[in-house]
Image (cartoon, rainbow, N blue to C red):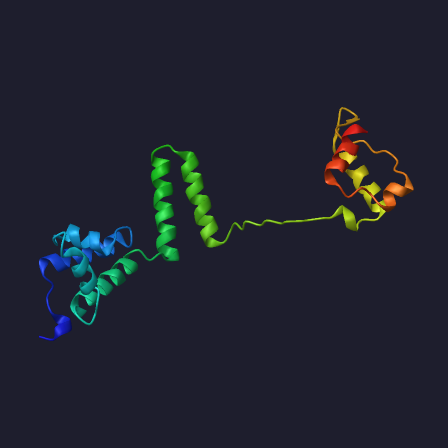
Length: 180
């Protein structure tokens, strides 16, 4: 029998299973302790068992089990769609229409029927000319009308000095607007 095909001891097998199952949520030392190694030897055992130079059969067992877990949890389109359909059907049986609709919606998303689209638009008042600014203010006023009254928007004529060089202090700007 080759070194790499050596059988694992019960403690090594337990270590491999715990180490792979915990997947980083526990330290290797804690996995060794839980596998039955003593408090004193757990640190060194956890270290050398993961070293292919000393325990290639344990390292191979860890890699094989990790590969097996990865295959078992692999998601593919058909499997995922079937699971969503099963959940939808179960929700319908239980009279839970909302979750059933949600599961069906997610199946549609998976198939590409629904696409989330977001659009971010930024505009700067600094780059607008005076006529563009006045048009924008009129548009805002027209869209904020309730019962024939504009709410929160008042357009006042600005003198040419203000239009040429408006105040730079934003706090001062807000006070000018608030006090008008």
